[in-house]
Image 1 (tube, one colour):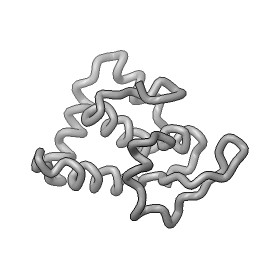
Image 2 (image 1 turned 90 degrees about the vertical axis):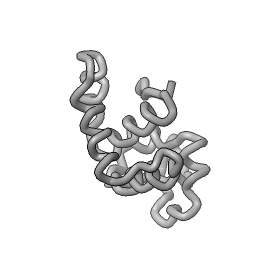
Image 3 (image 1 turned 45 degrees about the vertical axis):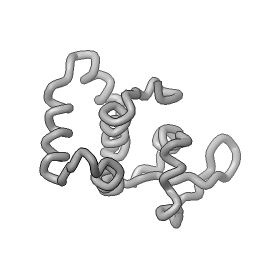
Image 4 (image 1 turned 120 degrees about the horizontal axis):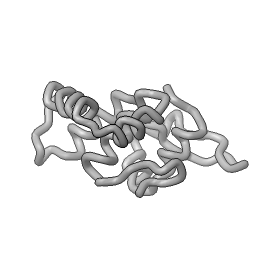
Length: 112
């Protein structure tokens, strides 16, 4: 489970935290000199969230794995540099979700 400062900062996104109510059992971390409640999804929670939050797209686990694989393999050089900046599978899956479903990318400080 990634509890790095980078991942905490990535997860400090209002729309994500609004989905976190059922997962808050392990969610208090020190960040910016204060203790805050924040949900840090695990890799399997990212995958589950995609399937449960987008039922209209009828995604199953196999299709999701193939979609993730296509995203990784079909990258341009610039996009490859972007994904190589992530240091855990949680960070990489979050980048995939944000890119695919929210059209956002992490710039090191926030989601654009």
